[in-house]
Length: 234
Image (cartoon, rainbow, N blue to C red; front, side, top):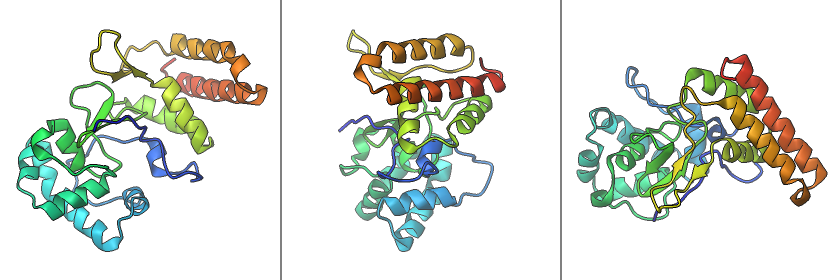
């Protein structure tokens, strides 16, 4: 089943330092693979004890070259049921993995650590198994956008970061029934216009929110806008 969820989401009540709030990043194939501290925290939250984390780390390591060469589906096809079930748990998927139904992107993201991701078709969404996930910052974000986002959200609450990610990134569903995609914020994106539009939209929605919430949303938007300016994006 395809589902939208934000990879900025984490366990309710968690601190703003939750690893998933940082957004995913493209894998670095130039270095030997090992789970990061953030990966281990995420896997623990998903119910994997140390023994199962060691096992899934071994699967990620073994599948690294297959991901790099675009052969992730073939690699998954050679795994036994127990290994596929472990990858299902590590990715927090509701349904068993059907290798024959996977796209290459869906297969590759199953073999990458929780903090990593690839967006092969450039739609701003991450297919992981059969699930379609929204992540902001995008995995293909420029270093400047990554830095601006981390700086702006450093002291925000989990809820505020999640709301800001949905406001700024957003999921666009074509009226003609085409595939959904996230807003394209790649090089050349007009951040000044976008942030001004978001602030205007927040003001227009004042009647539907408490005064305090309206002020907080605007403050968060302006914090991000200021950070985008400091990093040369606006």
